[in-house]
Length: 439
Image (tube, rainbow, N blue to C red; front, side, top):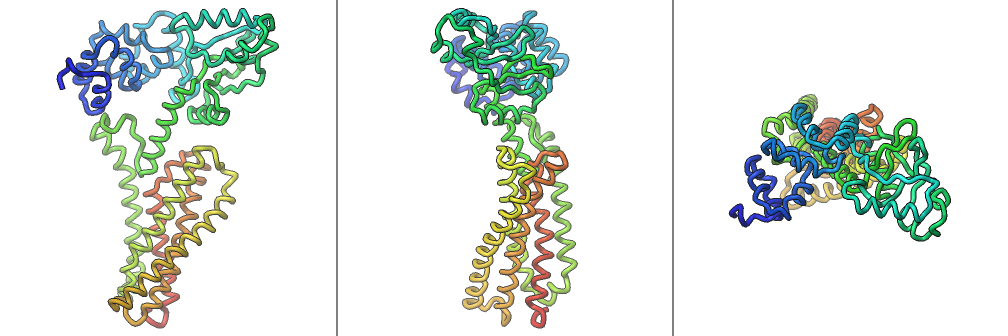
């Protein structure tokens, strides 16, 4: 495809696989009508890369195209030297706003917010407020959104909020103090972005005010900012659940060495954990030598326990992320997962029992004591699946209680933990059931 025929949709589709030079060339090939929207639609890291590849003389109009919160996000992705250069390209008012935003942590409410919002006074009339809002709507880049207008006192504390519907439905001579909603949901400036997302989702808001420790309004976090947060947090949790560190950049933009570093640590830890499985096997070496048939069912037993534990872990981590369960609910979870584990174990035990008896009837695979072997495997499956389910459901609670991210309780980690304990359960059950026959 030639650069002359490249559209913004074409470029967006191939963007992830392009090199930095190819991205800049494709960016410059777009028409003026397309290139602004394309740039605004890029992620902060991609915007920073495009600006980095541009000649210095070309950067000013592009960084000034961004809202203060978006410009701050781009500066966060740049090196310290590049950050200073980009900030210097902004006008004085925007520079102050961006520097104020950069003082906050990137994943805090203050780092997400836009300082451009509609401020009204409680002593304004409805007609005066509407005229003011009309001027704000006509003035480009003055406010982030007109979803709500916030009524502030002289010390910039939030006294109420009004919507367009409130204003148009009220008599023009009424004061805002008489029509505003005084119960305003706010978030502190240091609140974690995931908690901000929960507040917006719980109260079905389009925007939420951010206040400092003295209650003064500093900005707003809008729902479009939260969409990016939710996607980022979900991506991190999924990657951690897979048994690795979360990537800092998109997959195709992550260098191979960085990818190896992110994956090698957890993979090595899991490998060391699986070595305990070999130790457990060697401990029961005598039993295996006397009843070799027991070794045939080891993969079946440990995989069933690991799978049930992984299921439980995934369910609980997601429920925690959605705020459906908290630390206080651990005992309710134990009771639910105990019942679920016993039921699931019984289902798998029934399948295992039928499989062994059918194979014995057809092929005489397991010898004269096949019924006892089937009983040992079935009872072990009930125990291992139940244990895996309870362990998998409780591990996120333990990790959260220790102050870490529950998503660190990855499915491979749970499976490794249950593998070792599953072997212990299996061989101890086999010793009891097969005593006096094979053992």
